[in-house]
Length: 220
Image 1 (cartoon, rainbow, N blue to C red):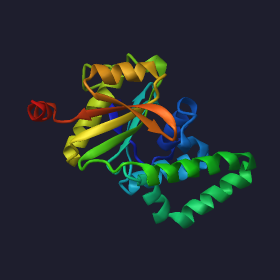
Image 2: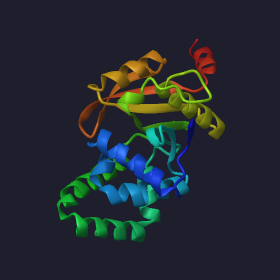
Image 3: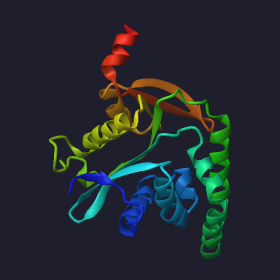
Image 4: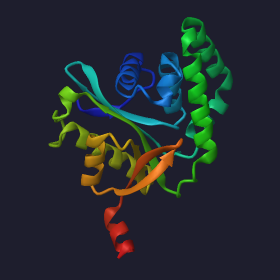
């Protein structure tokens, strides 16, 4: 199969994406909130509410890659939390009852989300933010049906198509300096680079103008 949107009602696919997120982005604040948060709230609820979008790629009968993003980089998580506070409280209570040791991680994650929502500079109109990208190493050279590019490039192309259709003008990526592969890829496709501080940690920020020709004319 080719690249397709994640169906928030497909529990098998949601679980597969959550598992990839846990295994390959284990230091993400989202993972600190626990497996129930990922499977019962973050992916299904935020996608249904339109606060998060996600595409997946299936190969050999399983999900081997996903890319998620938001059109609301200014506090999309806090918006979801406020809208579903009762439901989220129940999910987190069950998480703590089954895994009491997750309390510290949950408190740290909540602190990070609040800090970012309060301290983040307001994004320019028309700006989207890529949130998470995972491609299983064994499938990084995989070419999905419907195109000729390898999987990582195809996911990026799909992101661009969907963002342009949504009216977005640019997309940003926050990448750890030590993530060599992502830094090389985003530099190679022509993203604008800058160094920023996120939660007191040096971070690389890349910005890709979705209408490159218009951006180049403006710069000139």
